[in-house]
Amino acid sequence: MRAAVTILAVAALASVPLWLRDPYLLNALITTGIFVIGAMSLNLLLGFTGQLSLGHIAFFGIGAYVSALTSLGFDIGLPGGFRLVHTPWPPILGFVLAILIAGLCGYFVGLLSFRVRGAYFVIVTISFAEVVRLVALNWVELTQGPLALTNIPFIALPLPGLGELTLRTKMQNYYLVLVVALIAYLLIARLVHSHFGRSMRGLMENETLAVSVGIDVTRTLTIAAVISAAIAGAAGSLYAHYIRIIDPEVFAFINTVTMVIMVISGGKGSLAGPVVGGLIFGLLPVALRPVMAPEAQWIAYGGVLIAILFVLPRGIVPSLAQRLTRRRSGTTALAPVTLTETGAKEPA
Amino acid sequence: MSEFLQHLINMLVLGGTYALLGIGLTLIFGIMNVVNFTHGVLYTFGAYIMFIVVQQLGLNFFLALPVAVLAGWLLGAAIELTLLRPLRGSDIDTTMLVMIGAWIAMQSGTLWIWGGVAKSVATPFPEAPLVLGPVSVSWLRLFVLAAAAMLILVTYLLINKTSLGRAMRATFQDHDTASLMGVNVDMIYTSTFAIGSSLAAAAGALLGPVYVIFPQMGDLAAVKAFAIVILGGLGNITGAVIGGFILALAEELGAGYVSSGYRDAMGFVIIIAVLIFRPTGLFARAERVG
Image (tube, rainbow over all chains, first blue to last red; front, side):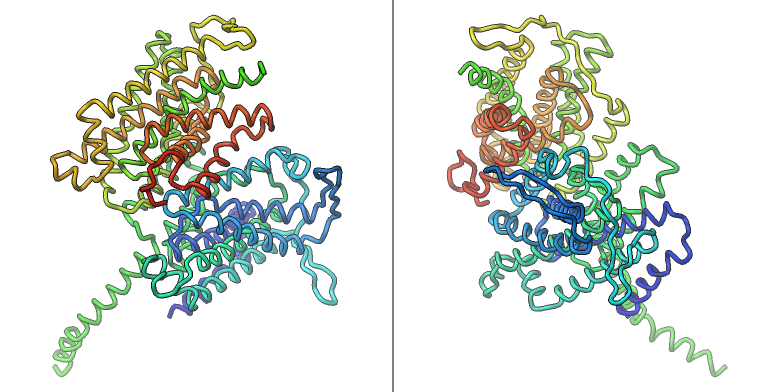
């Protein structure tokens, strides 16, 4: 049943570029898809270990910058009079490096920030993202600062024996994002249902108890942070090569908030939650655009976040799932009565 | 040397308003256990009240500060009553996200009403700064320092010498017991949030005329307030005052001797360093668990 729903959803999403010809909508779907990948990675931390990281955009941005700089090349001076020169590499290597370096950053940030919990953890993660943003803004030699990195090349897939396929069109990029999102989804699903996933949930529900049954909390959290950061880095790389221009604003706090809203509204700790929440909140601006000024849209955005927390605090997917199971158990309870009624009528 | 003295003077002026921001947030954070993301918006709101009273209504500059404090108090009380009271007892993440939603909505509201163009406020102070030997300081900044010092003193007396303050301190220590002793905890929460918000609005009203006023001005202010609270220790008012001055000193020295681009990074660096090396804050009696 669940597998059937997943396959149907994937088939529906895969069919979109075949009937949707509007480039604006397709563009909105691609950027939404990239943010959904980010939201899925955030859900791994927020939904399955219970740690609210509000600096998640840092890993997304680091992935974007690493990937862009790998494929653009750079020439910077280092302390001591050395120069570090890097000639452009193929973007696909940038994608791989983005995942590795974002994951590495996740390791170090995790190592430092998991020393504290709750509000303090949240504030450390925000601070980390802001420091990275200020570095991107001020290290002009490497990042061009506010002038932005421009002309980032498209991702080119090497095809054995056929040369390369450069992903230029919106349709090609749509499928790229869909495939990466699917891999991320399956990876997270696999992880969550493993022994490791049970450790994560265990420490989310009761950390003291988890420690007492032998779960190494810091190690578990750090591994989750590394995987989560690596996936966010992959999303950032896709973003850089699709939008083809990045500036330090990619690290803006509001982008983290967007991911958090996607996870919370869809349902944290549910695999499909960030996808559902992400599609709703990614496409909401598109729907509101003709009827509302941008400022009014943001007001609505904040209002909807508050409303969801008041009305559906557990998120859309878990609430719906609960309602469905309740109805199903309701019908099984009612079923015998209906059967006897029809049975009584039939002979006549 | 004179450059260093000038940095110290600037530090005093900045530190006073930072302390106001920090006290407001540390009260809310400490007593209510709410990570208040609307604190920066209240700061912005205070600055816009200054702009409305002075520039749009043409009223007296010195009247604007009490108006901003009162408006901040009312807005804070309204936020507490509508958004936080119904969520009492929910976990800290939920209230934090609700506060983020309120922050987004209110900041966009400011942008919608007044637009993104930065505003400035005319002040009644003379243009020429006060020159004291090697250093100089503008009269406006001196007024900001004096007003901030006065507000800090008033808050200190309110917390330590009044029965409301005693009830607030009791609620901070143990809200269940305070409730059993007859403290109206709901009322304390609303008062705390309103007082904290009015201090943030006062800080904005004071610093708005020094710089320029724009809708996003509160974002950095909020983060700085968090840095101050963490530095000073949760719910520690004296710590918040000292933390405000330390942050101002770090920013002045960072901007003066490292790079002005990294001025605003100082707050974050302090947050990260304090939480890693001394998570109970610099001045806490080691009882808080991080």
